Length: 347
Image (cartoon, rainbow, N blue to C red; front, side, top):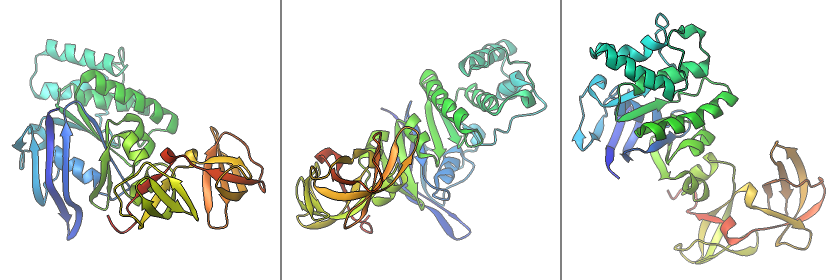
């Protein structure tokens, strides 16, 4: 695949505070990439530098292999959709979408053809004359996307565009955004702090914290193979346990040795072990390798969240089966259920 953006050793400082610390990132054509992390991690600053609204303190931004330092936003082949859509309330839907084309003095028949196509793409055909104030939040978001896409950018940058929508509409728009991206066939770079949003839509997730990229990978890789404790805790829910790497494919924790699928650590090395709640098996007492007692059970809609207390720790488990508090049970794991990481403080 062809690289469209290359961020090379990118750093940014605001009033003496370093918010980006030597970022290296490649973005490819037709990719849906999400920058994911908590507030203040540097994801929006990264997006704004790509858009041209900020200049890096150090490093290079290459677009199609060309350094675009100093190139203003309106001359870059990118468009940006913000959380606040910045639509023109005095214009109808058609004129909002057509605005950029009119600025470029595009011929009226071409404008009509392109706007009509965009309205169909975002499921707003027939809304041309509708006043912006008459639209729902989801409809306004579609207009903002159509206005950005009608100029045929090579990259669409989206800064938490679903943040103002309610949960049900946000989930619907996640699916629609991914569908739009596939249909138009351009690169989307999306900023969010919502892990579910990132997992649902992305081809590639870039997990950021404190101005540093923690991990880059597919949604499956990020969830199943977190590289450190921060990623494991930020993406989904986890039981993170201190253990010992006995040898390749064998770890020990809670006084029990377990086969695993990991290798390459030093024999006897201290490690962190990630156990996802849905991967821990609850068995009748005497049938597993870790014994404990059910101390609480909470109904979460699609599953129960159960806490099992052992002599050493508490385990969080997600299961569709109900277990009465006070019940003695055993826990067990298969090799694929265990993920081994470098211990906290070594990354």
